Length: 450
Image (cartoon, rainbow, N blue to C red):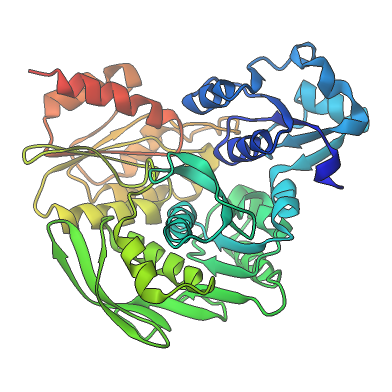
């Protein structure tokens, strides 16, 4: 289909991080945009502030009349929308053009020089760093990000159309709709087993993704992954490698070794070895735009971060509050490593909201092992997202597996009082559900605590 000839774009699930970036894009280029979502959030409020009409009830009668024009309307939906959704069924049964978010992203970026970042962890931070590097070196690009970049205060960036930056999402095999010139795979840990069934099927899908790279393109892979490509790593013999790391006042300082040169005294301000790897991957990809490596290194130092990716909410000598999107055992381990490295010897209270019943069931032992590293653990109820409950899979069930005496399941309404009671040196909130909506409340309450 030709997106240039379509005027109306209707989104089912417009409030998702990826969907809202597309909605911003179409609004930016002058299309008539509207949509549905089940819950009002800060993201949907921002979209409405752009003049986009959004309703929160699954009711076709709430859709503006212009979007009933079959010939002039594209309906974009997220895989999280259930097939019995009445608006989805209405458009489906009347021969409207319906496309998944990933298909539309592929159509938009197909004729650009496309950078695609794949991986079960690290996609969002890596793509946000890459966008920052391109911006700082004056490369014309459009970016569709899976988080809110603190450098742009948005998940959509328009600086031109020559290049594009996208996250290649493995969920529902969405990344198989993309046509990258340069791709990166940050990680391939087992996840989304409700979709793939087993880890081998997930890895096969990543392999298939790498085969979609355009002729003459390049693939970057974290060293150790079972994929052929240009490698990157820390303190190893990767093609792009970080060595001689030291920490000064919370900043990493290191040597960055490329196939052509060694760059000394490079600085990066986001905590955690996982973030160092993300920065290195973004740097290696950005080199493919033809920019001078030393200029890209300068830009690395000024990267601010991504909301809910090791975000410092409070940072004082006597108390630190960190928030992170971590929802997989490997991601929780990465957060713990970063805290331990930057704040050694501190007592840590973690508040974790498990995300999906299926993920909790599939990785319960791994979650328990990761959470047991923290001194005190508070578990919120499992965030269901797109799922129905699974019998016996609860936060109480997961709590029993955690090997720590200071642990409990807690309701959101009681969370602030419990945090005040424990008075931790470091508080960390983790999860991909709606725990992010609690952060401002917690900070405000602690700011006014005696």
